[in-house]
Image 1 (cartoon, rainbow, N blue to C red):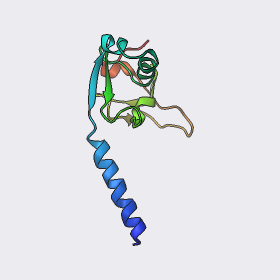
Image 2 (cartoon, rainbow, N blue to C red):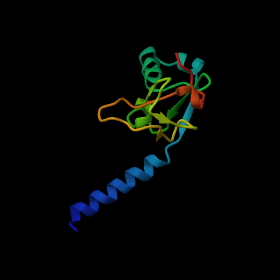
Image 3 (cartoon, one colour):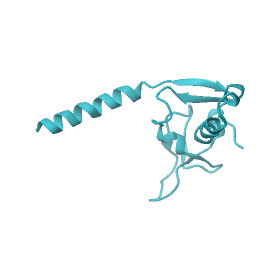
Image 4 (cartoon, rainbow, N blue to C red):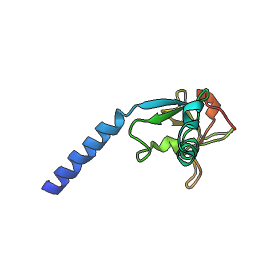
Length: 110
């Protein structure tokens, strides 16, 4: 094992440890309304509200979970109970969009 591969492995472990424990900050619609308009629009575009509340990662907007990119569908190919852990509900074809029914974990569908 080379020094470079040891350093690379250590950095990967550090990144995983840092972001595996990332929490979130709750932001209401009133709080989002107090943000600069472009920032509020970005937050609304990236995160799904749950019971009219956004949960924004404490790691900031530069590190976003891939789950932020899963779209809603009434006939999804993923399922979840908590909106954080997803499993496939059927076989997914190569190139197929990943979808989930947002309502299964209390998120609104607009």
